[in-house]
Image 1 (tube, helix red, strand yellow):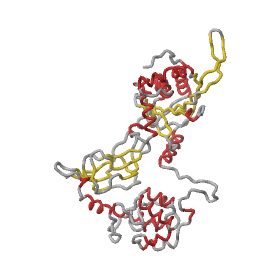
Image 2 (cartoon, one colour):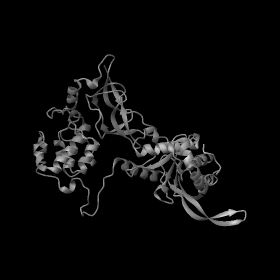
Image 3 (tube, helix red, strand yellow):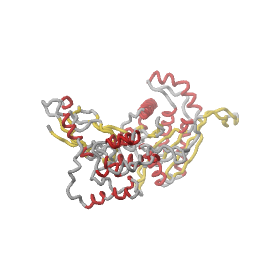
Image 4 (tube, rainbow, N blue to C red):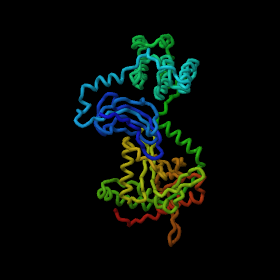
Length: 463
């Protein structure tokens, strides 16, 4: 048998790191090729790392909650050789798992830490003086134990002191405290404080912990001190969205141009053909692919909006990869990408839009599904909004918000004179990066999108 290292794979353009969210296979356990070993999360999408071949997970080199760079080794994996029995059914895997998860003895300190480590060992002393756990420069406790960012974050939010953290018996590699360990400790501490004295073999540093129980306000803070407000901790995706939006505003000077488009022709054509379209092609016909088609045509006319900025250089993208902002059931937002949208027919666009939207809402997107976007559209009309001022999806230079389609009285020019009629109208809001897209380009582009929508061919066949 050969032992290899499992590396964090490349997960699309601009994705440089991922967070280890959950081990699917524990150390010492066998698995089959292509079965998931670990669940990971990036700033774009959640995914899994599969086993390369049949074999045994020898050792995890990372912890749940760790942020790992692309290409970094995350595990050691033993491949089953020819003639070897599948490891998943061999009894030998059980002792291996027990050995891998057994906590390291506290009495076996590491020899003479380097100066950098000495600085980290001083972190708990700062915590004892009142510094929050996540503000400490190091991630090693007074007992020399490593704590992952996730464990430290949970400890801070739940009011777990450094002394308490050092007292928790870890089930991870080398006795590290895992997410399960700290959550189990918190559950015991909050539900039955007296049980804390029955915890397995606490270290001397924990002796003072029962004498100084954390105040109730520090345990699962869900309400404010006054009791009138609710405090909700941001989840991982919301934190990433917040960082992405702030960075976009700091990077790009935003300007927004508005145009109102007459959608009557498209509304009428879709009403007449949506049933036949679904029957012929097996997918629903929404307004999104029809509008996407007009956006792609306008990008061909004004390629300057299909770009990114690299220092003092403007990179004009040759591919048109159209992102479509999609709201998730959790209330968060994700932007799957229609790659090579300019090469797709209306049927192809409708199929891709429906597939991406469905997989986004069910958490089935792959990393490549959210990578490589060159321009983005966002449908604020879904929520009944008539217009909006969208924030650019970096490193792109433009984004178009689609408002709700509403019946309104409008002036129509006819050979016999102007008349007022009831029309289906929609606002288009184009936000663009004023570093490289001026008002003429940004305004002309959104006007061209409206023109393509208004001149839609009512006699167009269902293809």
